[in-house]
Length: 65
Image (tube, rainbow, N blue to C red):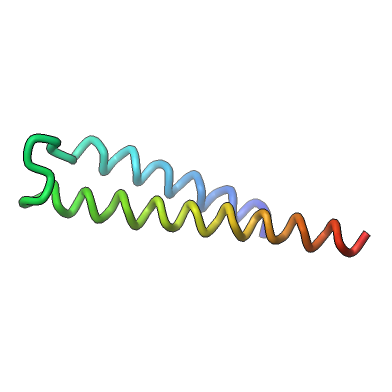
């Protein structure tokens, strides 16, 4: 599970970088740029959730000890 979380975080960060290259800052809410903005937000949420899950797993193991 630990490795899976790290892999998902890496994939999420990769998606953020990829979508950032597609983002047009002069007009961010039209066409492909809007899709890229939504993709960045979705990937950022996924990364945040994976970090929270990893922290919860660490706390769970510390409480067992």
